[in-house]
Length: 181
Image (cartoon, helix red, strand yellow):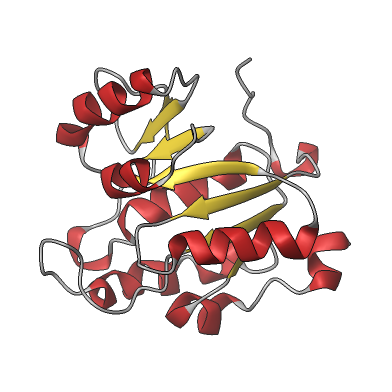
């Protein structure tokens, strides 16, 4: 069943874990599940996260259109009904999040996914394994994506929290009170 996009006034009281590919991603996810005592929707960020997550995520967000065929192939093996999110329409994209940052201020695929989660109506968005520290597998530093997150901080505040790293410093930790308000 396809989730309809919501206006801010119609937001659903849902929780979603946005899962990146940092080494701590699964630890963060399990910590979230343990602290809330319930499962939640999962959005994998990019091909590496899809490879890492054993089950089928509800969503996958990527700014790398060239990865969509491989993402779709992996998901077909999981018999997944996963929706793919990207910043532009392309074969295999189910949801377009019209976030079009200039390259120098990109928040990465994780920003595209986080903004889509807000538009999809999630009220509690928890970043797992998206610390924006260290280097991506290709060697580029994740710190380069911080400007995009700083640009969108006002839009994210109160809706998005993080379990690790610099994004946790920027947006705060998901406390028990926040998760249950």
